[in-house]
Length: 162
Ligand SMILES: CC(C)(COP(=O)(O)OP(=O)(O)OC[C@H]1O[C@@H](n2cnc3c(N)ncnc32)[C@H](O)[C@@H]1OP(=O)(O)O)[C@@H](O)C(=O)NCCC(=O)NCCS
Image 1: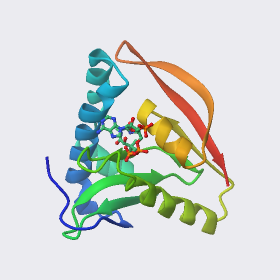
Image 2 (image 1 turned 180 degrees about the horizontal axis):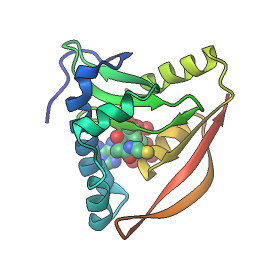
Image 3 (image 1 turned 120 degrees about the vertical axis):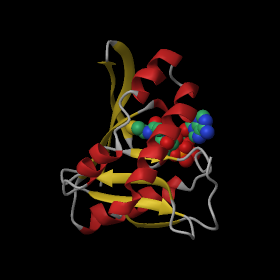
């Protein structure tokens, strides 16, 4: 697994980041998912990891996207923000997860949301992301149960009023 080269800083997403972001998505689910979800659930979640092309289309639909990158410019985490305050994606490489670095990425998003006058941020968070978002001042609205390819899995609807 790739290790960061120097300090991590936040910058805007660029189109050329996409293959690396798809890699982070897969590595994060594979390495961090099993702490809270069964092998079957993680396998179903991995089945939803988008191709680079699908991810490029999703990230290019007008939403804002920020990455946490090392001094060589390589991404190690990313987060997005849709115009209605919805956070769709948050993934961190296991090489840097669990160390507090991702909070800086969220702070950039929140600063932007405040600047443009958003009233509320909301997310459907995985179990690990629930603990991350609680630390960022979000509250759980509802525990959600749903299916991915016939496999039952849960996450948490959360919100933060700004
Ligand atoms: C969500 C995520 C970006 C948060 O970043 P982070 O740097 O891990 O944030 P935190 O340090 O606050 O950790 C949040 C929780 O993740 C878990 N976690 C973090 N790194 C982990 C690792 N390498 N292995 C297992 N669990 C881990 C911890 O349980 C932690 O909760 P705790 O602080 O109560 O122990 C990151 O955990 C991640 O990419 N997770 C996998 C993908 C995912 O769930 N994405 C969200 C989809 S909604």
